Amino acid sequence: MEATNELHTTLLTLFGKLNGGAEDATEPNDNDATEARTATIPLDYSRSGANLEQHCRPEQLRTAAELLDNQHFLLESITGVDWPEKNQFEVLYDFIHYAAPQYRVLLRCTVSRDEAIVPSLCSIFSAADWHEREVYDLFGILFDGHPNLIRILLPEDADFYPLRKDYMP
Amino acid sequence: MNLPRQRYEETFVLNLGPQHPATHGVLRIKVTMDGEYVVKAEPVLGYIHRMHEKIAEQGNFAQFMPYTARMDYLHALALNHGYCLVGDRDAGIQVTERAEYIRVITVELNRIASHLLWWAAFLLDLGGFTPLLYAFDDREQILDLLERTTGSRLTYCYFRFGGVYNDIDDEFISDTRTFIDRLRKRLPVMYHSLVTGNIILIKRIKGIGIISAEQCRRYGASGPVARGSGIDFDVRKHEPYSIYPELDFDIPVYDEGDSMARYMVRMDEIEQSLRIIEQALDKLPDGPIMAKVPKNLRPEAGTCYAAVETARGSLGHRLLCNGDRNPYRLKLRSPTFSNLSLFAEVAEGMMIADVLAFLGSLDLVIPEIDR
Image (cartoon, rainbow over all chains, first blue to last red; front, side):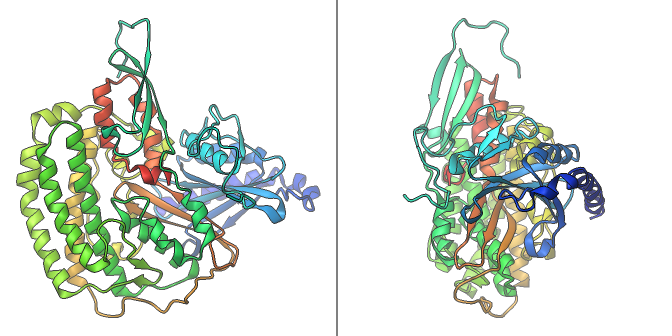
């Protein structure tokens, strides 16, 4: 538990720096449809299953992931979500740590549905390779810098993205 | 392992699967070969993809329960458990105590069945037929036990939000105890003496398919694959859920990182599961098996994550709700998907016969990878 608390404090500081450098830049974007923002939100583990939620803009994503990599986190899964009312896609990254029990960090990143490009984390976490391919496969979100962004579960000639809310089979 | 010094001029592509018996289901691996050596391995997925995540969005919460068991059909109750856990957590349901015990007893029985089947199939891959007959004999006892309680033999739909659907009776308890004694007696004789110490097996899997702890981290490996590489990581201890904190059991960890280490982790886990079941049966409290639960779950808008330990590793559900009666988005994080993703890196430079032994030691269940 001690290791967990220490890690939590370290991450709050590091993410604080990440937010601090960007706060001025976010203000004009408040009314923007993409709603780009950065924030660190501590969560209640017993309720949500995670301890820390970090919202970041796409261009900050790799910095945030590198920061977690330096603390020896591992990427557990990547979840894509479609929010058609806001005209947005959201990508959620789940991180855990082998040595820190009951500790889970969630990175959240939103992009516009019209220009859905997120930087790839492949060069930082090898696990991102397949998980990003899956999100691309099911949502059509592009991952900039991915070495082999091809469909993984659906047939290679599929021309649809089934987990988009407007997909009709 | 390094490639041999003498290289052939030509390489050729070998298609392993999707109907190859060693791939256990419909996994296909495109292997580029240099003689007997693998230059590049490329798993091709999706042959049994059914888009369960979209199905989950179409119905209400309870309607998705039967589908969970169709993913990992060898440890189906753990998938029941994982989905119930995320629903219970998000809707704030307190599961009754007796139900928690029943959940753990049945999940652990199912875990043993899964490990026994893996053991049988793995040795079959390596050319040993006899072990399969022993393992299936024991597995059959478990399936009979679970069938009487849950109503099905393989694809269970036994758990409910807030509890389980059927109570266990005295006959189940006494038969389970008999089974524990039986397996305890048979493990050292029929499993370890006959197979584990066998020189042919040791030559085939010792030092083969070595995965480093750093590789495990980079690829997000979990379960016996991570524990065979010296990582003490088991969701039952790491993110305790249900009644696991009240029970006394160990997490077997081996440092070697080879196929033999993963083999030993699973064999030791069978013994630990027997310990868990025995304790849970001793402590089993009386009381209701279902909590008071609304007919339709309608959790508040927000997101929630819950992980459980299946026989293959950490299974996670990320649930996003928008206050409606059906999940807005349900992501399934399957352990073998991550475990298989490190296969290509490790298989490079191995001989084809070793690759098959290594593949078997990962314990893949393809419907769970493809979902």
